[in-house]
Amino acid sequence: MTQGISNVHMQVMWNRLISVVEEQALTLLRTAFSTSVREAGDLSAGVFDHEGHMIAQAVTGTPGHVNAMAEAVGHFITDIGRDNIFEGDSYITNDPWKGTGHLHDFTFVNPSFRNGKLVGYFACTAHVVDVGGRGFGPDANEVYEEGIFIPIMKFAERGVVDQRLVHIIRNNVREAGQVIGDLFSLSSCNDIGHRRLMEMMNEFQLDDLNELRDFIFEHSLRATLERLKNLPPGSYNNEMTVDGFDEAVTMKLRLDVSETEVLADFAGTSGLSRKGINVPLVYTTAYACYALKCTLAPQIPNNHASLSPFKVSAPVNCILNAVHPAPVAVRHVLGQFLPDVVLGALHKMLPDTVPAEGSSALWNVQLGAYPIENSEPAEGEVLRSAQILMFNSGGTGARPTLDGLSATAFPSGVHTMSTEVTEHVGPITIWRKELREGSGGAGRQRGGLGQVIEISANLGHRIYINAMFDRCDNPARGRDGGQTGAAGAVSLDDGGPLQSKGRQWIPDGRRLVLELPGGGGYGDPASRARTLVEQDVAREYISTGQAQREYRYKD
Image 1 (spheres, one colour):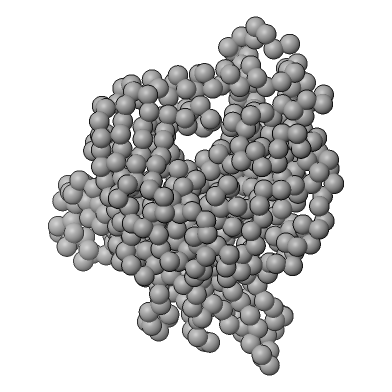
Image 2 (cartoon, helix red, strand yellow; image 1 turned 30 degrees about the vertical axis):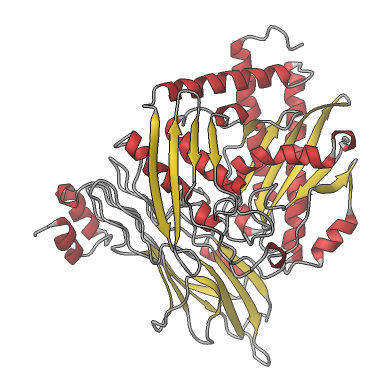
């Protein structure tokens, strides 16, 4: 009974479908074991048609997961085989090139059947705390060193979980309880999505999703193309240099804009790194398209059709199109700079529209904690090993009419984990976590502030850090006369410097100190309103000396 449904009813069902996948995502948040999922929201969820095209995504989630997952479902259908897809199945992979770019992200796909007929798929992705190997960090030379690699395969067939696969994974990761728990949460949240979809289809008396899908795709594509028709056609260039691992990396971009598509071409970008900062094309595409769509068609829901006019290309085995077996564990570091690269080109097409550069890449703190032999724990504690993951963010770039946001994740959109939850996960103490005075780039609109974080091991333990930080040598640039944000820094509490990337042990009795970078400013600092400068000084966002030097402020 899907013929002749009015546009109003179609729109109601479209909104209902988005609520279905939002409940799917919230189920994962409620049931996940890892703090990166339940506290930070590092996940995605969506519903797809029977051909593997994304119809709707949850609002909860990250661009790197959602947009990469949009491509992944097609790989699942091909690799599993259409004749091998059964009701009650659940499929799994962490293949970086068919999933979301590195081994720490697991993608699950469950087919959705109605009255014995395949009507679509539910998919979800989440970051897990450990996959074995060298751990979450950039030190590996090949993907083989980075952890266990699960190709696209069945996690469950006709409702029966493959316990042999579970056993293999359990014995190849450091945090087996968390990881296995997250895998079951991923599969279960897809099942919740299926149940809610069946309730919706019962309510609206739908036999399949085809007519609703066609309505969504037709209106999404038409609306997106209408936005593109109003753009000035042409080519727009930008480039950005970031720290890299042991040498700087330059990302070059040419945007070709027409009435029917926008092509982001990264020809001229640096070649592969020998370490795990390389980015598979699927992740490059995800974040480049995110910046394009957010700027050019922000009100149109994300789906297969609304994303289709945005294309991405990069030379094979440049650092933004790394192919197997390149190491890719921390592909987010370069990948999360891509929106800033794209926005820099868009600024030349649409002045006074996009923000200045920000800290961009998350400062993920991955710590390994181990007991010291023959030592005693603090009273009320026990000696234990743990892998601890903590998401943190610097400042975002200032906007044409507003200051940047402080300690805020853009473009990933994830939340930071609370201090209390992080300390509960492993034997560490977080001594301070505060805004970093003076770190926002000066401008008519000030860049967002970074933060300062200080961490130590608890009594009887020692810790190492898998550093994966950037913008220590190449801070965020301002725009239209705005100044750069402060560079990041990694050190010990006695001032001893640490490297921004790679595994390093924290000496016993010392604390790790992270100074996160700030966002770039926007516009001439001399034109900043005096009341805003006074407010920044009063709030200790900047010092009086900085106000005098950078803003020409006089009492």
